[in-house]
Amino acid sequence: MPHPITLVRRGAYAADVPTQRPLGNITRGTTNPNRLRRCDRWLLATHRDRLTKGGPPHLVDLGHGASGVTTVEWADRLAPVRPDLHVTGLEIDPERVAAAQAWARSGVDFALGGFEVPLPGGTRPELIRAANVLRQYDEDEVRAVWDRLCARLAPGGLLVEGTCDEIGRRHVWVALGPEGARTVTFATRLGSLGAPSDLAERLPKALIHRNVPGEPVHAFLRDFDRAWAAAAPYAAFGARQRWVRSVQSLAAGWPLTDGPQRWRQGEVTVRWEALAPR
Image 1 (cartoon, rainbow, N blue to C red):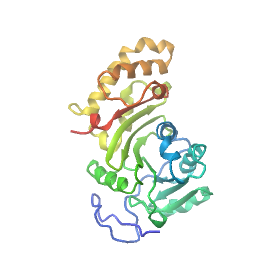
Image 2 (image 1 turned 120 degrees about the horizontal axis):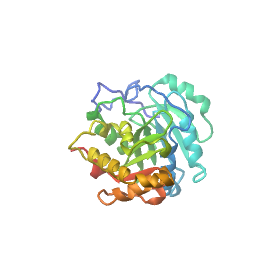
Image 3 (image 1 turned 120 degrees about the vertical axis):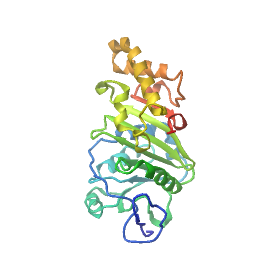
Image 4 (image 1 turned 45 degrees about the vertical axis):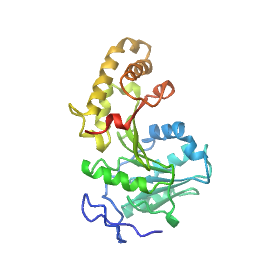
């Protein structure tokens, strides 16, 4: 396995010098079963071809936290599509890596590593999932981390980076390819939603401080709330119908990339460039 890389100081990612410490900072590490189900289901529905083409895919769960449960759940959800996939959970805390070994099995392992994504033989993963990893970083550190992780992807690979609440009711993530950010997806348990702007507290680090007047993500959530209010009569048919009607209205002014099949799941995906910080 390649030597891990140290973080010289917060914000410094250029020192690719072999050391004893992986690249990154230790996060809170909290996790819960089923927390990442919305993102996993979206991946399975919208990026199935990434899994089905070519040889056995290698996936990385970056920052699996204090438990290996969400890493194993990810493997279980994707295995019906690709039984020969391999998932590696990475953590920069040796104690978490040791604790996760109880979850290891054929096709699922756990290793010490961070943003350098060390895999045996220099393997490049088809998918990297980084959930709740960057929330404790500064906004000006995000771009360097994205660039580093995207540079580790296999050709045509995908990085998914975002934030969700403790039990996975609300989750917002950015999907990135080797060329950079592509889309932002908002996903929620509709029965618990007061308004679409409730998702603002789960915006990824690149956007959460941009939810202010004059920024695109603020305008998007404002328009979404207005569409939600206008669709109030549809609540009589359930929160799902109200959400779908709201997103249909939103599509008139925003470049959405999905359709009713995903909207009915409590999701909506918009092109990154429409929400990118100014």
